[in-house]
Length: 253
Image 1 (cartoon, rainbow, N blue to C red):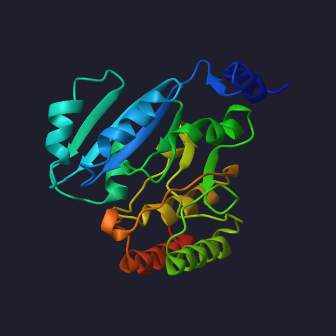
Image 2: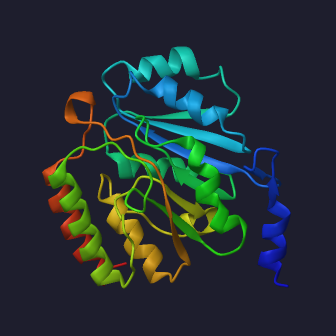
């Protein structure tokens, strides 16, 4: 039996309700935040409630809506498992993730948006292919059967187009390249130089884990999407940048 399999078995156990419990590892949960005053406390409560060994690394990316002040007054120093870092100006999601990766100390790393679109209770499902020794990287997928809020047709079509273009150039068969929930072995994500500052982080990291020939898995997740009135930020310009990023990192490291 391989060392990886032995390690995986040592890190997997079942609780009475059938959930995987963490034994001997830490999950670093990276939360990039920009103008999420209405949701940041709720998502932190949900993340902290998950029964898993964890550290929570929050990076406020130059918020101007009161999020920054809320974090300083009500969160920072009040929760031992939460560490907060601040960008002096808005640099973009990719830049905030890059800062959080540098600060992460856990063996596994997951990205968690600061809105309420993704459910932290699914961390165990996302981690399982890693903990049992099958995967180096795990993507959630909103299109593999999990419950999801019905929203924008053209967003769905754009997502499928970008995923297909990415697959053509990386030779992967992902169903949801743009998903937030991506989990990495820490040594994998820390070995990759991330250059993208905005939402183009998603196609860049996908291209780079493909080039490293990482073992990539997908698992179905739920999705409670929001619309622009509720604070959704990604737009059509980000789609154009994603196309350029997919093409660029096919040929560039």
